[in-house]
Length: 417
Image (cartoon, rainbow, N blue to C red; front, side):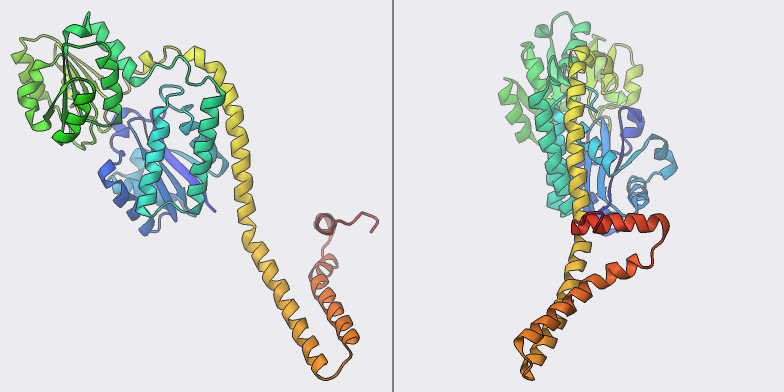
């Protein structure tokens, strides 16, 4: 078993790098199959969110998996390598546990990452790349994350990305109740933001999405109305607050469309939160007057509120995680000796069959059963003891002492024996 994890996150790479290696949700299964079919890994799961892109693999040659990711995104490996973290065995297990528990998130203790990891596992399962090792890893991961969240206060006083977006908008506008709010996308992140903003009772709420049906489903929940992305050029100027998070690989809002909206608004300010990776809003939009543009990295300072209240729970969480890592590593080690145990049993079975065949031939010749049993038991004993006694007679020095200790432990012998 060759457990290996690697990736980049908000701590190691800026947004401009993270968006280059993000995986599109619609193409995730094809990417997973390509990774495995190319021989870069035996098993694989890809976790791709606004804050991280990580690959969990059963890979004998991890470099092949890293090369695959660079090639998949048409990037030189040297361009992403400075931002990569590479983790094997215990480190990979601990990282998986910490990520699922919210200890590695921009918002300490945030629960959304657990759902994103579960979705990543479902996609790997559907792609046929979730093998025995990774299945067990994520079973343990989700169990440990549950223990952390139920046995500690890691989620207490949590300020989510959605709550941070509301706080930021309240710095620009005195009252959200007097503003029109537009949500672009209809995924989980947009739903979370929509719920937080809807609680402030804005004047009007609009949901824009590629498919009108999904937009309508969310709009009904928050008492808003739905449009499609093709309606944005005409509708954009009517909105004061825009929160966007889609899976688009190209920007939804370019500098030109924002300039036209500002002109129609007579340069009344627009507040935009872009939570997508890759970005939904062209970075040049930030240069425009009357636009307040925030990305996922820009809200880091806001989400630090309440952090101190959760820090005391981190030590408790780490104890739970360390215990879980020990259990999982022990399981991996026990699985690694299975081929040796199987080979040992096969060797013993061949010896047993050989002695049994000899005994049956002697009985057929008329030898007494007592004599045959004595010969068979003596033959089996000699065969089973030949290898260890031969080795004992030929090892020297420290190796001999180590081997003697193993023999005593295997056969429960006392030193004087």
